[in-house]
Length: 238
Image (cartoon, rainbow, N blue to C red; front, side, top):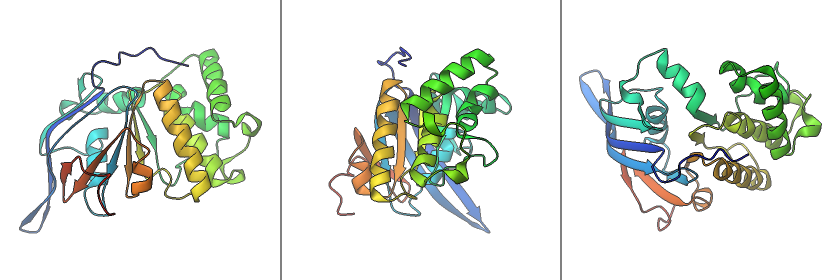
């Protein structure tokens, strides 16, 4: 299922990113002059305690939130200067999301949840069927294709979420605490699966976590502390 993407240029470039919030007469910096890049097929872990700014940075990279200054360039497209609805269309085509609480649509089957990004991107029906089948096989859920989310275990639901995030072969996958709602065994299984599928598709993977054990599975660890980024991570006594 390799997509043959160019692996020499970074998929993600973040330059001089800043974001503050106003509370009354006070301004509180949350993201401070952040720079980062992620190569195709590379998994980068963003490690930080609760309140360090991880979710804000993720939302800025996704284009869900807007920076006060700086740029986010994904697959050559500066999303910091994009406006709706073009930004929504860009996200659908170039970004996949994996969340801690799965965020599956309860009224859709396993296969239908996986197929959703392809349908939103107006792919032909035959292509949707083929790609959905491939992803069901890749995540080991072909026998559960007709099951609904409430009929699946937590680990199975997260595998569906991973398949949904990768089925349209996005340039970037953003994973926000993807193992946070799973037991250790299931968490290790879905983490290994997500990383291997992302590498196979040459998708960049930004993995947000507060767990050093999870972060150490990545190719690189970046640490966010009080809105500033460092490359420590693995040496921290977390």
